[in-house]
Image (tube, rainbow, N blue to C red; front, side, top):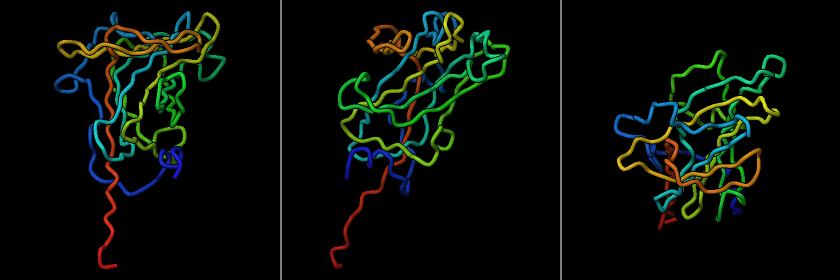
Length: 208
């Protein structure tokens, strides 16, 4: 079976398992928007995080959570629908993000006016842009979650991705400008969690 076939299986699921989580106790995070990571703006900045599954088995996506804020609207949004949207992508690679394959995307929108209050967003396969495809997490591969806003000259909307509040704070993420190559950043990691459903191990019947 090819890698892409494995990554797009729709199969029976078992119990939910946390594959990565850098939320603090009680699902907390840094709520200060002045230290949050800006997505969009001018220049148009994208941000991304990475993780690997710590388990030897295969898991289908259950949910992704992150905390963020819709900070500033695009002035063109009134005449160009979708310019305030945030696009969240899930990617996989045996190497880095610049060589990764996109597995899934989500489109998030909030009504104007922008709100300064952060909130936790939950993404599932059912709420994705291709809900009939369920991504699968494979041991030994690198996974990435990207957040970007459509480029609109100098008027791009701004979202914010809140940082984790772990002590000491977890550091490291990726950034790009105007859709260019991704590069590593040593600052505090944006907050997010990923959970999956284990694919049951098939055990042949020795009597058959």
